[in-house]
Length: 362
Image 1 (spheres, rainbow, N blue to C red):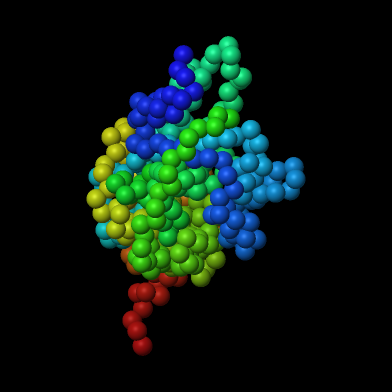
Image 2 (image 1 turned 30 degrees about the vertical axis):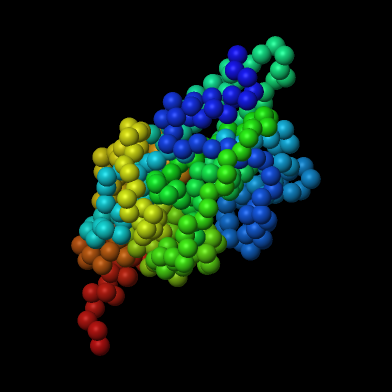
């Protein structure tokens, strides 16, 4: 059996064998970055994402202290995989008939499932390497976006990358197109060195955000974020936010598209993240008129399911209104009578936008 001192090497090799691009180990501590989380919640920056406010038995926010949420955890294994593909960025697309789906959601498989499968291989190797009759039982738990922790903070202290001013993890060689997966373990493993912040004086992500969601470096107000509005937000979207959403229908990549560290981001070799047909710059009319059955079938194994059928159609209608394309008016007039009142209201607003843009000034 592998000795305790060799387990770290086994873990990292297992991660690379599972086709992760990066792996590091962080200790379980209440890092300074987590001190800001309670205030972020109190300030209302989480919007309607109530799961962010989950508390432990003592009434403390779970994501603010992993030690309180999962007392047995001693180390966090952080794995990352590149999902970038050889497709244009959202900032390079101009076709008014097409919408934008965030890069991470194009894949053949939901990234949660794809990353979790790889994590399971790493976890199994760890368990097999540690298992002896002399050792106590090893506790482990794996998460992909579902655990009581702020993954990017542990990614920083695992040396995977630094937290950029757009709040994404940035790696010097791979950029920010990274999916993160973590394995909590009761083992005291030797941690890696934290990644240094290389954003410098650059503020391109902050300056480029059309809805001003990045209220300060490293601070995101979800209520203004296009990703939040198009995915998490239920019901009607505030009118003052609609124009800034442009033609985004699921998520937003702008703050990553303009980041200098993504200029030379390599393309992933993972087959699961290759784009599905029709999801790169999808036709807005197709999305707006999609039936519930077609939505279920098209996005059966996709994170796009999270926005729900009504949410995607609402977003498509708003995107039509921001397109400036008068050819959408007949579609919008039809949608204005839709049985879903949120979709109908969005369509009426969109039609009004197009009608106003067609009127001559003066």
